[in-house]
Length: 522
Image (cartoon, rainbow, N blue to C red):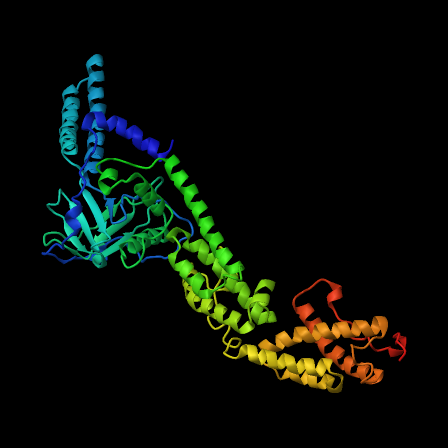
């Protein structure tokens, strides 16, 4: 039997005797003005609870009550009516035991029957008192959070003892409970109260935070709700409820006085619709990232700013993966993200756009990871990674394209013009070039050396135009120098990247036995 079944069974016993619990909702205008005559609370150090600090992220969401229209959020608190009903039920149970014993004594002629009837009356009189109190009172204590005014009302006894304070003057507490079943161990308390009371240590029925982290999550949702400088918190449960409210045109009165509530089927339907909408927004982000004709840091930033709140997490995840891979490609191999970018952008333009993305999205991603307690790249979840905000500082600068073109022009002159063919000059150019441009140069050199060595080994051909301008011996000597130097660079890269394809290695001794090479006659 579930906890809810237990409660329903108890209600079936209590309601015929004490009636249904009367719900007296607060006056929604109670949050408009502060309570004027207040004083600081006393002896807060004696409170049993642990003060709760907001937590931006909690991985295992626990459901909470959502009596809100997006402007005001009303939360039920513990009140005396439940104690009245339980006391009455307990007193009646003991009364029935003593009265039952009295009836048995009548049948068996047992002495002391007067004592049994006396004990029955002793417990029946307080039971009658508790029943009357339970029928008179109802659920009349609430905490109302108002997003528009920034105030919180601790509503009590039809407003006669209500207290309204700014949200900044409200603290949250949590106490551990070591008993089976659902437990209400979540408390709200203002730091001021009415002159004739010690404090308002109010136990609230928002959810069932079984540990401190869950209590932190609940309080962070309330904190985000009360921050009207930002959009409503798009957390599971809350935005599904608000969509349901908007779809049906319901107000706060409808879900409180009117008793309206969403069915599981309605919420599941909304959940499916939201997931589909999230997928649409994610695909839009993908298209902006993959389509080089549309690739623009400004366009991506603008898209993210205007994306629906419920899709922010997935859109941010998609963009962060792109940034992570983009940084890796640039730093490790000086390559753009893929072939489409290479064909559509110069390196300088590409790096400029990547830098804009890093500077805008980097702090957002890093803040999200910090909130999750993750500080290393490999600990990223759901596609989010920590972003190095200075990743491209040693790569991107104004005039990058011109520098790249100048280095490549110098390489082409020394590699493809016979009169300037010079292995030592090419090696020196590579060694003295900034690392980012050197990586670009390295790929060009290795590709050309591989091709030249293969032509010499397989057919004895020199590069086009070299036959008439340079001797075979001089050509092979320069080519050997290039093979020895850049062959080792290539093989080291293959080892470092753990490439398992043997064909990716260059044979450093391919030109050692020149007599074995078939040379075309001149």
